[in-house]
Length: 426
Ligand SMILES: *Cc1c(COP(=O)(O)O)cnc(C)c1O
Image 1 (cartoon, protein in one colour):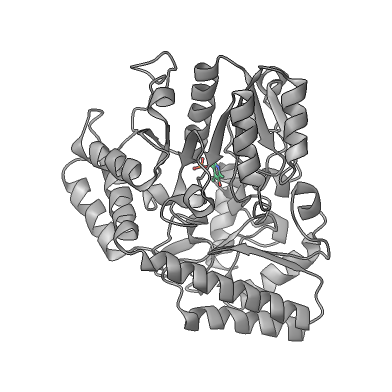
Image 2: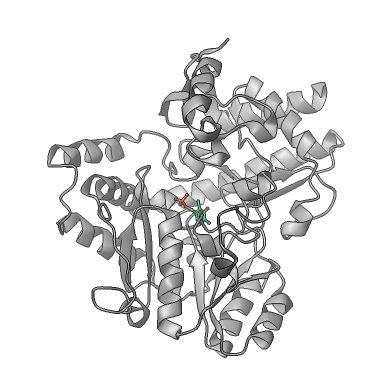
């Protein structure tokens, strides 16, 4: 038995499914999760001493690569001054100023501890601001695990085939309306059918939790127009795309301004951080200035702020990082597509910048329904083969691959060699 297998045996006895988040389970690919002991740059090391070229990057946060020396140093320094005060600190001001400076649509921002919290709070704020209850979300988009958002959600919910979660009362989701990604008519129909009732439309500006599904031309602009026309707020869930597609996120990349934005993942530099922000007028609804209550004992934690500030500052001062990430992404994902197609595999390689995903289907993947046409058995074979060849991919079809600034061309070539071997041998 390997060390990972031993640890997993212990884990399943005392942790549900042996993991603290379902996406870490290797159930969908029929494998035992690898227990990770350390990481550096684009490599992770498991408990058995196996090294992998990592394309997950903690699901996005590690955009500079694992254990970046400057981020690490700032965390150690902050920890030396105290782990938590439950009181205001200068770090929180620096963080808020940094975010407002980087993202033009954000005039005020509130820090929380996860993407889930950020979305939950943004939705509450939108409802408080508009005095309306209904929320439009898209099938296959994941917005964390708060009750109201667990309707036709992506990510682990999609992989496990859970249509809705148990334990969510119908009352919690009766105001959540589902639209079809990349289909503006489906959104307009909901607005027409629910006059003056829709508080907000929430969307992943690039779908990244049903695999990767980029927005069709005009989709985000169309959402902006519909929200403005019907008096609803547009919420961009940039928990994945924020500080990734571009420094100012998908909204900068596509030039569409939402009313509220949620962040997570990259914003914490690997520490548990989330944030939501937007127009001053809307954010002034939040307690203690306004009537929308939202709080957090550890929110704006000084160690977490240190990691986030350092990572965001490095990204801000080195715009070249984005040029390289996006160039590498364009090259790498089209190489994968080329190799698989030459090997006569029916597949779609969707990508945008450093985010990408291989779907084993002949249908173009543009929404939840077409993503679902993927052959998950072939993905399982592909995943296993790649893992055996030292390449660590998402252990489920409906997740993204993440490139980091630490992925060199030589490392990416190594991954492409594994794809070539897969096509040859399987
Ligand atoms: C990961 C994710 C979330 C949830 O963030 P957590 O930190 O896991 O709670 C929300 N929205 C999107 C788009 C995500 O990818």
